[in-house]
Amino acid sequence: MKIFEEIESEVQSYARAFPRVFNRAKGAEMFDSDGNRYLDFLAGAGTLNYGHNNPLFKKALLDYIEADGITHGLDMHTKAKGEFLQTFNEKILKPRKLEYMVQFTGPTGTNAVEAALKIARNVTGRGNIVSFTNGFHGVTLGSLAATGNAHHRGAAGVTLGGVNRMPFDGYLGDGIDTTVYLDKVLSDSSSGIDLPAAVIVETVQGEGGINVASVEWLRNLQDVCRRHKVLLIIDDIQAGCGRTGNYFSFEESGIQPDIVTLSKSLGGYGLPFAVVLMKPELDQWKPGEHNGTFRGNNLAFVTAKEAIDHYWSDSKFQDEILEKGKYIGRRLDDMAKKHGEGNFSTRGRGMFRGINCVSGELADKITRKAFQKGLIIETSGAEDHIVKIFCPLIITEALLKEGMDILEQSVAEICGQVDEIPEEHDFFSEAS
Ligand SMILES: *Cc1c(COP(=O)(O)O)cnc(C)c1O
Image (cartoon, rainbow, N blue to C red; front, side, top):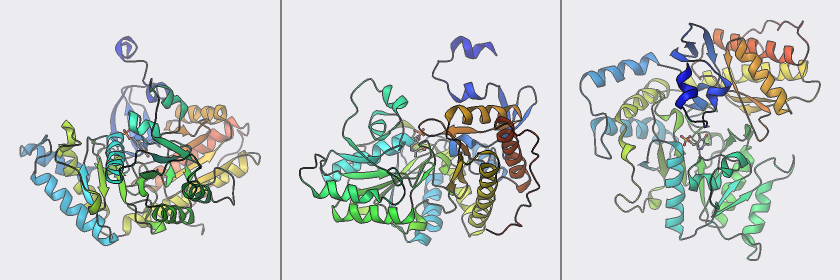
């Protein structure tokens, strides 16, 4: 279609990697306007954890629209918002013994991050924020200052201030606990690092290359924050909503962040929705101080509630994610071993996984090849050297296997071992 070249801005990016016109999608499958079918292992970068057009939510959404339910409500109380809050409190917060106030921000992840940084700065009266190498927190100026990526930072056009960068877990190699360095600079009044209002961190860095913070590192980070009376913000926009297995990605570590940001799959249906969760004593906002026209996307409240009701009322979904995650991990380990000539490695947690192809060029060739074979999959990391496996969490075992087979075949062909046909992988047979 010529119209895209004619008037759509050069800023487009995914459209370049997947140059088709898509017009229909269901679950983990997408279809272009020529009727070609694709498996979606990108899943809206983590926005479609429950798949495209999930029938369980679609029904609720259609009923709501049919009954002339409120679509836009600024931040007024609506029935849909009330029901979302009720469900979120009863089924997500209370069972996890988390006590948070919920702030509805503008519906993008970056707006939730902006609000989180503001509240941390205003409550503590400190301007500085600590973020981590390879962290990604969005591209509006406040969030962008906390983001590491040079390509994104370069577009700011102004000096990005108010943030100091610290090494993420593993940045200095195995066996070095980088929270020791953070503790040291915060203890030394002449370190040159101003005592921050907060530390903001992803438990698994999504855009930064699927770097996984260990449970111990997260606990140590929380200890350092508490020792220095610095707030801990977990940016769970990509890793949250089940991607790593639990609803919140930090559950396994047992830490209790002061502030949490959620977006992407929160709305459940791919509808824009973002919140900031904060400990009650931090909720010192004055009415309307942080506002936004689209804080009341009620259609997203409806589907978000449905998502929680259907998938998070018991532990079944969680168990499935962990099971599928193990399968993905085994398949990736296999690919690395068979085709990586000792250079490839794998990483990730739950269904948040990747294979490190070392070279960005190689990873790019692999994802292009996969796309030719009908698999939509992207790369991440500083050099785009990680192939990122990000299928919807609800994917069937058959489609998951099909996608992993396509990926393996693509890796084999690019790495020059075309004759290797992927061996049969029985879904749940191998113990791990
Ligand atoms: C995607 C993402 C954001 C930004 O969300 P937008 O909706 O794109 O503004 C922030 N933090 C993390 C960890 C993300 O993955």
